[in-house]
Image (cartoon, rainbow, N blue to C red):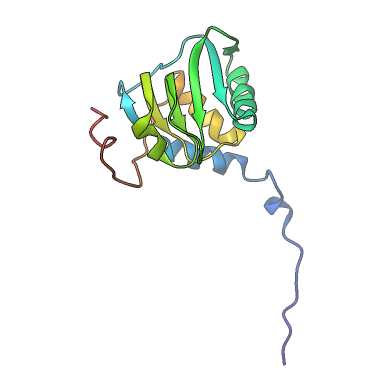
Length: 150
């Protein structure tokens, strides 16, 4: 009987070694669901709301892009699975886009499929208009498909 030998993973497989890949995947998946076809969707000041973990990741990405994170800015609601609909200037679903159907956004609705700092960097690039959201919804459901006019 032959036994498999276990090898240590290569150094490049270490945690954090694929940050650039994570950013590229997040940027390609990010989907505009409602709003103008291209940003900017936020001003120089932003106010993230939602669970503390994604808000912290968003804050890091936003500050890294030169945005001011403070009360009174463009509100960006970060909504994950299990949370109800949101009402903000910009509503972003973090894992499943279903919550966007019941949410109210005065500027835009976006589906982000992640909540780490790399995903938030991709989001901030779209929010500031540096890049456009290029993804497509992976699901179809009433109340959401017809909102995007691009």
